[in-house]
Amino acid sequence: MKKAYKIGCIGLIAFFVIGFFLSKAVETHDGPRQSIKFLNTSKTTKSVTFEMRDKNGTIDTTTYYVDEFIKPGESLIERIPEGNYVIKVWNADNSLHDKTDFVCKLPVPGENCYDLYRFDLAMDKLYVITCLNYVYEGGDFATHMSNAMGTHYDNLKLEKGYSGKAPFMVSENYTGRTFVDVEDKLPSSKKYGQIVYGLFYIPDTLDSDQALARLNEKIEAKLAE
Image 1 (cartoon, one colour):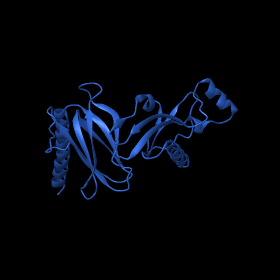
Image 2 (cartoon, rainbow, N blue to C red; image 1 turned 180 degrees about the vertical axis):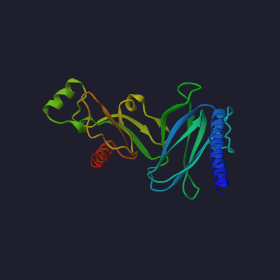
Image 3 (tube, rainbow, N blue to C red; image 1 turned 60 degrees about the vertical axis):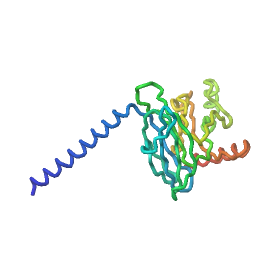
Image 4 (cartoon, rainbow, N blue to C red; image 1 turned 180 degrees about the horizontal axis):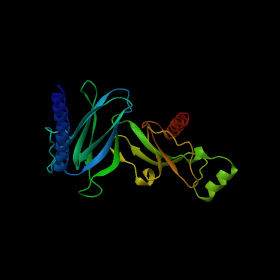
């Protein structure tokens, strides 16, 4: 019995090892990859497919380079090869929600890129980068030091906006600092000279006053977490 158990364990381990190397071989064959993060800020489960166009613009409908379901409020990271894609987002009943074109090109040819593209399957949001330093302003001495180092802000400061209708990549100017992603909590404090950036989403149908009010609401909600 023990011998059979050991043989079974060895066989199971061998199965996973072979599977691991086969997956690596497939990835190597396809070439280097780009990381992309899928989010779903809608209220229903959606799926997303990536179909690639060839040099003549013909869509390869036999191969899905991405084919994933994302539940509301969840996210998933995938890695895709370079290419000219048609992205289709589907509702739970398999009807087409929306589609967009996307050209994926690696920043350094021949090398994997782990900087994230982000794509929201809701396709109805505006993503905004904000400087959050104003929420950390403390006493007079802290304010004086922050002013001296050029990192003091009295009010909400908008830095950059991205349409959620297509994949977008947040610049390293922001992610290379203290960066608060959509799902992250705010740091409890910041050091002198430190700049804190946050990524938030709001409906893309709001006017400027409504958008600012909604953004303030979302920041206040994150402060209360």
